[in-house]
Image (cartoon, rainbow, N blue to C red; front, side, top):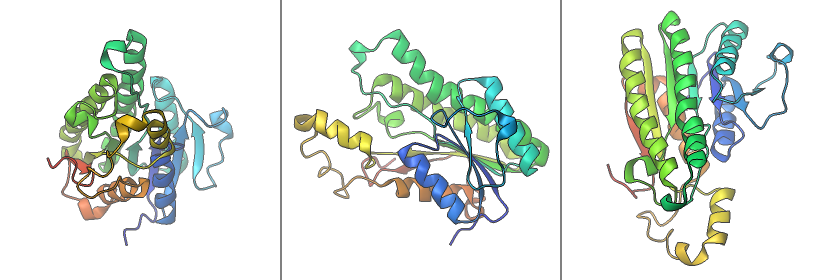
Length: 249
């Protein structure tokens, strides 16, 4: 079993369906986990209790200075930062001809600009310690142009895959690995609601998957734990598909 004893992990999007499972598994495997989300009640950073595990911090990743402050605080309190997982994101399903400029800007701000802010800030500090691992959560939509997702979401996730490669090239000389994961359809309350709203469109969709089912949040979380572990020490710049064979890249 992969363990993360004495490892410090920063996770964005920690209150999401997948983020919650990622946090749970890292804690269970011995890591000190710093969970961030816009959904947490606002608290002054100086009043954050770092003795608990996980630590919960309110963070809007689209705000560059706030990202820097949280990462600096984490390193100040924990002395290092071993792993960063960018799981924060927004999903849209609006058809491309109905997309507005505001839709596009919001999606790209969270999914891409936020990932850039977090990855860049983390890398600056990881370069100093000459070690670290960053994992970005992309999507199958970033490879196929969307199945259920909107064009803004798909474009943002394609860019995240490319951003991951750019960060990986920059970090490799310093012992920093950067990878991404591309989940396909994952069971979640959001997917359940989509089924309910588009029953006719979704008929038979699950059965058409090669494995005959959608994935679970734990499938994504386990893949992320592998990429964060020493067992993947020679893997960087890759995008790991987690889709049950829907896309064989």
